[in-house]
Each structure stands twice: as structure tokens, then as C-alpha cells.
Length: 322
Ligand code: UDP
Image 1: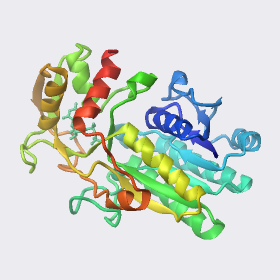
Image 2: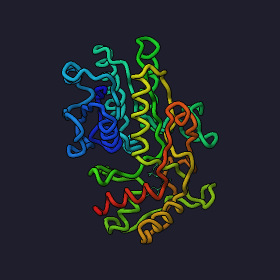
Image 3: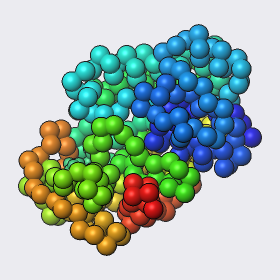
């Protein structure tokens, strides 16, 4: 059993990871400033409200709980916001991560598992994308995540930190039985928005572009269940704490679904047709993103077992309250 500090542990991915870590027998401490997190999502160990940029607060937290590893999920994540207000993203995400890395160094805590993203790759040069794909982000959000990857790489080389950079593709799904799921404000993601249209919370669902070079003209994405993501985080933490080497790994299902296929799957799973209309392309969307997940399969023995139907069923149960 180890003690894991989960920053952003009251958020979407962080809360599922905290649950999975607790279920694996670890002690979880959640640290979250609740700017986007939800207090009621942090229920698998002690909760401390605070900001990752607060050096004194972090110092006290490390002294009190003596974490063996940090799972760093706290971040601003909305790509469009990052374009409008990059200063906020660089300050929160990058300054925050540097303060956190310094607190780890001072406390001699040497295992850093980081919520990274396929957005660090930018426009795909080839599909599926493996970890060797050039990293050339298209948004300030992606750049802040890449900067943190690089900072922790440098800390690893100089100070003996070990890192796992986990590059998520499209996180989706929920753990409805545990009372946690996706709740972003504002919501911009395809699956919740399509389900909101079914629930009458939105007028309808807009398909952003049908003239892409994909099999039906709509964007293709690699949706991965948040519980599969959480499982990979547990594996990554245990690898680092067990003396394993640092790594950067894609976390995606390894295949893609178009927006139209997603809507068809929603109809199949819920028995209801999403009222959808065509809309122009959304700025910055890549036509297709698919992970080559063979490194995570090999190095973490990770098997993302939950497909799109399971993702939608859990997301539907979560959003519809069923
Ligand atoms: N999308 C859409 N309508 C929406 C929201 C998203 O057609 O209201 C499309 C979007 O263009 C993308 C896919 O759904 O191709 C997934 O978008 P999401 O925002 O969920 O994730 P992203 O891939 O942008 O991180």
C-alpha cells in the first residue's frame, strides 16, 4: 500500500483514478481547488482544498501525508478557453506544475504520474499515432501539457524523478454506481452534448462538419472509458513505485468512431435517436485521431476492455440519473 496525492482528484478523470487507487488498496489524498472539481466526487480518502500554485499549502500537505507518489490531474482543460486566455492556462497549468514539482523535490517524493493528452501531438502526420509522433500542439492548452512533460523529463534527468506521461485520447463514460461522471461547465464534449439533446437539456446536437476525409465525412475519434483510463493510472503508479522505468504512453482504445457512428451507437444503446443537424467545422478539430496503444499494452499490461457501447451506457446512466 502506498500513499498517493491526487491533484485534481475532485475532477472527472481524477475522481475515477482516486477510486481505482483506493480499490487497489492505496491510500488516496485528494487536493483540488474546486474551480472545476466537485467536492462530492472526492470520497476515497482525505480531501484538502487548495491550489497547486500554493507552495506553502503543498509543503504542509507533503509534510502531513508523506505521499509516495503524485498523480497530477489538476489543470484547466478547455481548448477554446486556452486560445482566448492563454495567460490563465500557462499560470494555472505550468506554474502550478512547477510549484508541485518543487514541492515533490523538497519532500523527496519521486514518482510523478501526469495527465497528459494526445493534444500534445497536434495535427496527426500518420494514424494511428504512436508515442514517437512529433509533438507540435495546436493550442495553448496542448502547449501547457507538453511544457509539463518536458519539465518533468528534465527533473528526471537531473534529480532522479520518475515520470509516467499518460496521453489520453477522448476520455468518456462514467462510474454511475459510484456517483461520479463527467460534469464540465460549460460542456463541450460530444457524448454528453448528444445525451443532453436526448434529455431535452439542449435543443439538438450539432455535427461539426461532414466534409472531412473520413469514412462518412465526420470527425473520427478514439473514445476510451474513464475506468480504463483509471486502471492504466494505477498500473503506472505501481510500475514507478516498484522501481520500473519512466515512460510516456498513449491511452486510447486503439480504434476510432466517427461522429455519425457515435450517434448511431447512442441510438442503439438508449433506444432513442439524437436530434442532430449539420453545422460548420469547429476550428482546430483534426479530421481523425487514433491511438497506437501498443506501448501501454506492453509496458503496463493494460487492456482497455470497455468499448463505445459500454461508454455510452455508463454516460447515459450518469446523465439521465438511471
Ligand atoms: N463534436 C460535434 N458536435 C459537438 C461536439 C463535438 O460534432 O457538439 C465532434 C467534434 O468535432 C469532434 C468530436 O465530436 O470531432 C469529439 O469532440 P469532443 O469535443 O468530444 O472531443 P475532442 O476530440 O475535441 O477533444
